[in-house]
Length: 251
Ligand code: NAP
Image (cartoon, rainbow, N blue to C red; front, side):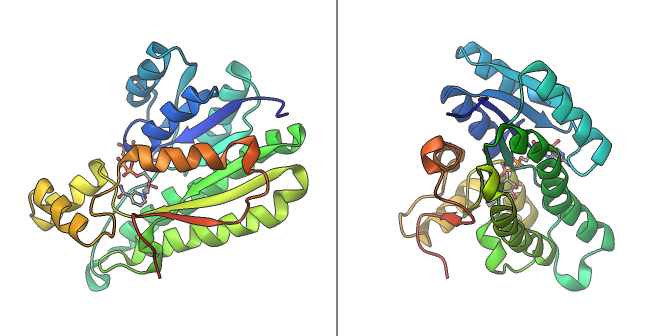
């Protein structure tokens, strides 16, 4: 049995992170809801507590080492040792290579890769002590290459290598690490992409759905269901895997 049922979900103010936080709370975890500001987390925390769960709002920029340490300490003090971590915080700064600025490159690398690194390094202190843990990292189908996303696809491919390495290093402590690579999920992130390319969001979703074998776009709950399995005790022999949640196979 796990010693502690405390989970941290980053970027949990909205979108996929909020759905994962709510699902893990429903599964019985006390959830540290981490996003850029404490205020942004309040809606997710309220939804969880109204449904009878336990959640704590924690403001932190995952790419800042000091803020990450303070955030994980706060969760450990208030909820107990975090044994589950979902590295979900993410941003887009899309542009074709010749127009991509160094800031756009660095920002995307920092939030996704440095963020997952700092959060995992901090949380594994508790997981190794508990001799139990589950880490889930959000990759993307963009890891396989996507026009206008040199920064994002490199970061999301990096998440897969990072995940496999954590699985190898941490397995002996009862810790698994897996990645979820979603395809098109209906969130503010995909809405922003539609706005950027000047297409109405409903039309954008219809176009995406037509190219997806199950003929629909994904919902945040589709990702949350897979996260729920990967962080469960019964998933203890699944580690270092990348699960595509994209309504069809990926190359
Ligand atoms: P979203 O709706 O844009 O939500 C992302 C959340 O992360 C926001 O609340 C954002 O806060 C937060 N965040 C950004 N930078 C942060 C930082 N430095 N520290 C802490 N929190 C930060 O995105 P989503 O669509 O739910 O995506 C969630 C994850 O899934 C991301 O890693 C994304 O790359 C991945 N993904 C999404 C899709 C998709 O189709 N939606 C597909 C594949 C993978 P602010 O609102 O304040 O910026």
